[in-house]
Every structure is written in C-alpha cells, then in structure tokens.
Image (cartoon, each protein chain N blue to C red):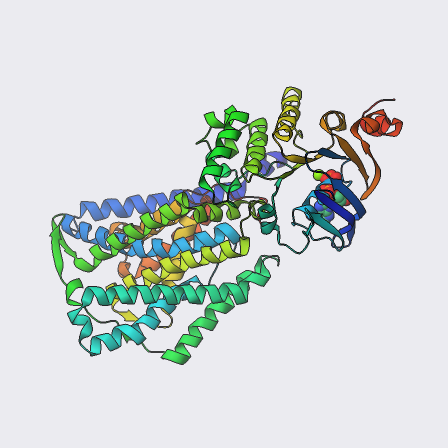
Length: 353
Length: 237
Ligand SMILES: Nc1ncnc2c1ncn2[C@@H]1O[C@H](COP(=O)(O)OP(=O)(O)O)[C@@H](O)[C@H]1O
Ligand SMILES: [Mg+2]
C-alpha cells in the first residue's frame, strides 16, 4: 500500500490537473465567444493586425535578451532601458524641437529617419557603457551577481533619465504620413501598424543576414558556443560581446521609435513593461534562439491581443480587456513550468557559464 | 635558436601548481611529442603556449618573439594553431562555418581558398558533409574537423592535444598518418598524447612529463628504447 502511494508522482498529477483546467477554460471560453457571435470577422482581423504590430515590437526587443543570453548566459534586465533611452532622448532633443519648428511636418520621412538613427545610436551607447562598466568585470562571478547588477543598472538609467529629462509623459509628434488607415484584408488597417510590421520584417531580415552570413555574425555564434576555442581562432571575445550588445541595442532603439509612433508618448519608465514582455517572448521562443525571439514576440503579441476577447469574454469575465498582461504573464509561468526551453530552444544546457 | 622555446615555465590554476618549471624546444620542421599520464600537465602546457593560461614565471618565445605578453586571440596571428583536447568543434555551426572560423585570422582570400582545397583533399569526408551541423558528426569526423579548422589558420606550428582520444583503433592509425602528412607539407607539430606508442612512432623527439615536470627528453627512438618509458608508458614489462 505504502509503496504504491509513494509511486504516485504528486507533482506530475498536479501539473496535469493544471493543464487540463487551462485547456477546459480556453475551450469553454472560445466556444462561448464564437457561439455568441460576439465579434465580426472584421473585428477579429483588427485584433490580429494589432497583435502582429505589438508582437513585432516585442520581437525586436526580445532579440536583445536572447543575443546577450546566448553569449553570456545572463538575463540583461537593463535591456528595457536600452529601449527607452534611445527614443526618449531622440524625442526630447530631436522630434519635439523639429516638430515645434514645423520642420517635421514638411520632411516627415527624413525626420523619422534621423530620429530612428539617433535613437539607435543612443540605445547602443547606453548599452556599450552598461556592458563596459557594469557587466564586463563580472563575467566570472556567480550568475546571481550580474543579474542583480543588471537590475541595478536598470534603476540607474531610469532614474538618470527621470532626473535629467523629467518624470512626465512627453508627447511624440503626430505625423500626417502615419495617420489614417488603408483598406486591406476586408478592414481598415492603420498605416502606422503597417509601417511597424514592414520595418520589423526589414530589421529581422538584416539581422538574419548579419548573424548567418557575415564573419562577425559567425564569430558571435562561436563565442556563444565556446569562448576559449573562439579565442584560439583569433576572435577577440570581449569585442565580440560588445558587438552582441550593440546589435541587441540597435534593434531595441528601432523598437523604441516604432513604439513612440504607435502610442505617441514616451516616458522614463516606458521600458519596463515592454522589456518584461519581450523577456517573456524570448523565454517563450526559447532564450538563446534568435528565430525563437521573433516567433515568441509575434506569438505573445497576438495572444495578448486576441486572447482576452477570444476566451476571456466567453467566460463572462467583465473587464476582460484589462487582463492582457495577466494572460502574458500566465503564459510565461506556464512555459517555465511545462516547456522551460521554450518553443525553439534546446533542453537547458548543463555546462554553460 | 629553436622555433618554439619554453624556458622554466611555471603555471598555476589558483593554488594548483600545474607546471613546475618546464623547458621545451621545438625546431622548425619537427614533430615533437609530449607524453605523460593523465593530469601530468600536457594540456596545461599547450594552453600556456596558446595564451589561454598565462605562466606565472618563465618565458615562451616563438621565432624569437615573447608570446606571454599577448592575449589568446593574438597568438594565432603569430602562426600557432591549437587543436584542443576533446576537439572543441563549434557544435551548432556547420562544417564549412567551422572551417571559416579557422580562417578568422586571415584576409587573404586566395590563400584561404587554397587551404580549403587542401584540407578537403586531406579529409574528403568533410567535403561530403560541408553543410552538416558539426555536432551531428561522429567522433572521428569531429577530430578531422578540429584538425582541418586549425590548418585553415595556415599555422607554421600546429599544437595537437590528444587527437587520438576516444577514437576506434582504425581511426587512430589514420590520425597519426595525417599528422605525418601535415608535417611533410611543412608544418611543425607539437603533439600531446597519452598514446605514447603511436606518438613515439611518428615523432622525431619527445619529452616525458610527470606531475608538472619534464623527467626525460630524448629522440623518439631513444625514448622507445628507454626501459622506464617502456614500463610506464608503453605497457611493456
Ligand atoms: N581548469 C582547471 N582548474 C584547476 N585545475 C586544473 C584545471 N585544468 C587542469 N587542472 C589541473 O592541472 C593539472 C594538469 O592538468 P592537465 O594539463 O589537464 O593534464 P593532462 O592534459 O596532462 O591530462 C592536473 O592536476 C589538473 O587537475
Ligand atoms: Mg589533457
């Protein structure tokens, strides 16, 4: 009797119960929503497009988490601040003055290009400084140390920006070229969402080329696998790690511009939630995997945007739209429990450090 | 002056005194072997030459130049390549990408292309598996890849750390044949081995390392004929 009891894996049973409960809730809610015909096809398309646009931004930010994790096995919690710093600086010192002078309305494309370049450059500078000063000396320290340092760096940049540029929301200029909708897919799609999606696709293609084809990209992958052997090849490991931070920060800098175009405001704390969401996306896709970060970002964006309406509304939850963050983080927890390596990740490595 | 000279080198891992004043010479064109039991300090010797570990005292010179002042990633530019213990191929990169990384230190496109031809002729297996992920290769193929990758740097001195480790006996033979072939094409080789039997057949000279000290040095023939070596390393009574 005792031995049979001992053989039952209680945790396993508990996990199966959770899985079953989630599946029942999702199926139930989805069925109810669909049977009630709550939303039209057109509304679903809107949710989906918004989800893809939001997911694109998560994907761009998630790349930075996954790249740095790939080479250092460290979660760079200051990455959200790399995202914030670029666009916050570019808005205050460029976008707003250019807009006030009326120049931005006359040269919107050139203006946006300049803003994007400056945002990228500032994000990159902040990243390089953080890596050089806060992280580099901690390469051989226990893994908790750089993690805590990263959280400290995150607070540092947030408060530096609050102190120097102010704690209030700053409006990002509204641009004529980005306003309005285009009829597509049987609905009206906002121009800005189309821009977000196209820019993301271009960035991801460029990144893919860089990582897969170029000598530096191969060096990054070599350093991610084995730093000693990479050094034997003549690869300067420190320099390659810096390049990895630069790459991730450049993507975050662009994501910041897209974010400002969609939400039209910037703030010293704006990196926090997107940062955590993108981290979730990176874990979801399999941290360390670049395609995983892209897929995880898209998946999370769509899930957040469609999920509340699809299965929470049907369950009769009143303020279901407020629950998108709950969905996102529930997903993170579920992934960590049931598939810690994420969608595309390999089983968590034993050796690494 | 020898091509590579280690003079009274001491190296430590924290408090562990791994090399206790070793002196080694390798002349241009030779195959020199370093034999010794597990833990004797063979890999440590190669690591100190390639800059992965800095000696605490003693000098290491290559073609008259002091190597100890350079970081590991500069050593390959001097003309020294290491085939690390356990091969150390980049498992997630393809065969050809591994070879590209072997030539990371070079910019002479034509020379790189010529060396690629050369290693593909030396190891036709790798040509067949060009696009394959290195982690999926067999042990023998990974050894070929690690050797080929080092050759892609076009080194004048090739350091090899136990290339026969973990390979089936037939493959071991071919590894040593390859080493001789590489040497005949003009590359100097410093070969670390536990398989003293094979190593002493291909080498010109050898050193015996014991707990961080050189206890014997001689021509390969001299070592083969040495009774102590026969007992301790060649399994003869
Ligand atoms: N990374 C390391 N940290 C601490 N001690 C080490 C390390 N690598 C090797 N050693 C020690 O140094 C000595 C020499 O090791 P090694 O050079 O690897 O021997 P061999 O290659 O001849 O088997 C051994 O006592 C080993 O335990
Ligand atoms: Mg060894």
